[in-house]
Image (cartoon, rainbow, N blue to C red; front, side):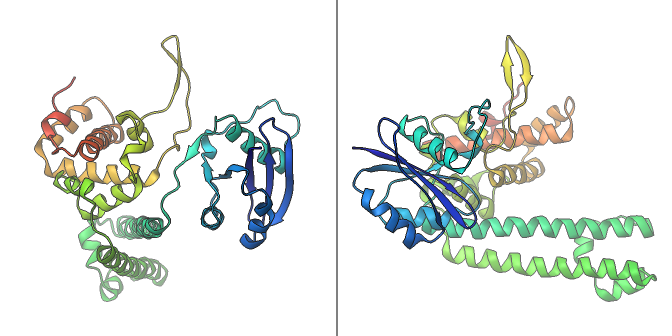
Length: 341
């Protein structure tokens, strides 16, 4: 007898549902989030279990790693791609777990990628850097806003980074405004220091794998962006087509079409937000430092908004990187950004 399991994971407990080949429920139980208790619950069925499905929620690491260490085959469900029948009159945790188990049984489960445990920790540290960079940008923009609002002064990012507490005392006579600017400046300096520390640790632990080395030859992609692309992409062979990779990088607009007309939008948040950020960053640099990319961007800018023009460059870079990684070929800027109307 073959068994298929679905697990509805919550913050403090999980609901387990095992079904057989005929969709008969063999086990249905709610249990606290204790990996030893969970393994003990599943142990009598271990030889028959074909697989266990866990939803890709915020707290799945410990459960998936624990089950895999115990010898179970685990599938990570892509929550954004799972849509239960909307006409269901009643739904609860048991039905959710049963739904996951039966999708695995029927071989229709939309799966997410279970990133290798060891590399996942390094990837998450790089994601922390991304978070800090965002916060750093917020504080920098806040300082620029204070100078523009109160002093009608426009400071660029380099000027902001050179500010001191003494200069703030000279520039702002009002205590409240000065304290606001000082708070932003302290946070900016602290975040800069932490970002640099993370980068040092990452560079000590990480080296670009052979299939990703050629990424650094692309204008706009330095070591940190190349590492981001490497860690967020994982195994490039899991993407069968370039369009799949571009979509995963959030470089493709979603939509449903019928008879040549757009009927509705799809979930624009599907995909990897970190890769989306990486390719936008790469586009910003490529536009500045590569004349061919700059000309392409300017042609798009003449017809489209800045946001769309930059996303178009990011899309081109994502597609080019796919081939560089998959086929181990040199980046050809003319092929990637050749003239197109």
